Length: 191
Length: 168
Image: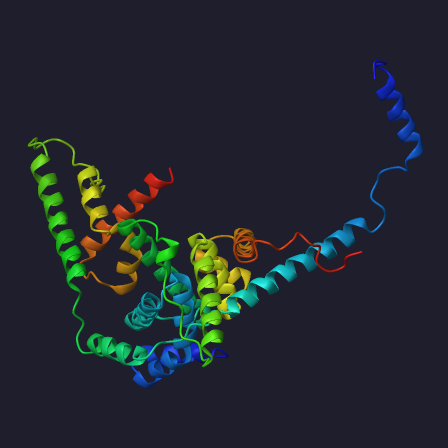
């Protein structure tokens, strides 16, 4: 089997606790990154990322390596984040952009630089969090681990053409939000 | 501009003076190339924006997960809310069965009713929607949270009913 992660998951299914620990170590950063970006909230994202690992652990007995492990884990993560955010919005109403999370810690020491970086990160986080759920999921799935159109379509249970449309809309919305003053300049191959 | 034919004459003059307005050879290919470049540029810009935000697991993330995993491995105890939902479902299934049994007409020679599961009532759906259960069907399915096949089937049925209502 070429997929080393799938092999680890098979060993987890067969009772090898060390294999699951290794899987966790390999995927903890991508999962946290995906969930925090998805929710726009560090603490909430971390909680959801942990949920994903627990879900996978609970379902280990039924695991079959039918697809690449990364496609499998991002599918679980996407469904979980979509469900969790939808439930939260049902309970509390749409999340206000101003309420979105604190910016993440940045590995910088200069206070001015730190402030600028945090502000920029917060703007990006708010803009991403403001995207419609499925557009956001498609964009992050592609960005996070370079999932292909078909893998994203599988994760979102939709068609490849719908995924392409979602990605185009998401990029357009982000550009409009983050570069509102950017002129409509032609790119590449201009006269 | 009182002459109504002025416009027509101007059009004719322009038609004669201007070249045929048709795309030249290679127009489509050049446009496709420029469009692809524009899309690539936009994708790169969005990537650059997203790269500004690289969240990492915070302090204590691993320890908290190990604690949760330890609880999981040391004997699975359903969270209170999930236990409440499971208990409610079992009670609902029992009530539905009792209701159907009481509603059956006492005609001994009547043909047996078709073997179709009873459709949930509006009250059932309201109650389950209140419990967020319908949204959690996939989770229940993945997690094996319910061991009773009859209850699980009831949830699946309600889930289908809700889906049919949303997308007729």
